[in-house]
Length: 115
Image (spheres, rainbow, N blue to C red):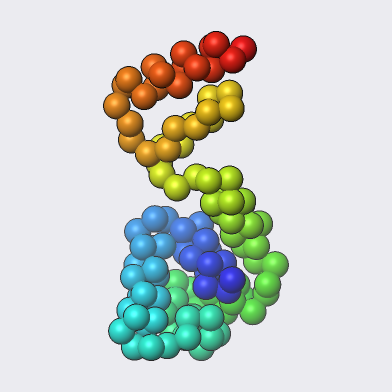
């Protein structure tokens, strides 16, 4: 979970571009360099490499409460079946990912009939 908290920190402090840079670096570490990306040293090196403040990144890595709520919210979203963007809940029906207009019409009609 430390890597996920660090990724949330990267987005909060550097935006999506910084978050993407960190994720790319962590993927490189894991898939190409066979490093354990929950290791505090690996995380700190990755954060520093992409330009995050090393002291702030180290605080996030070491404090399990930092950005914990952000990660738990992401886990909750995933557990509810959200797999695509955009994602809509219409009554008891869901639409996930980009869909043609007829899909929305079908779901809206079903929701109206359910009401």
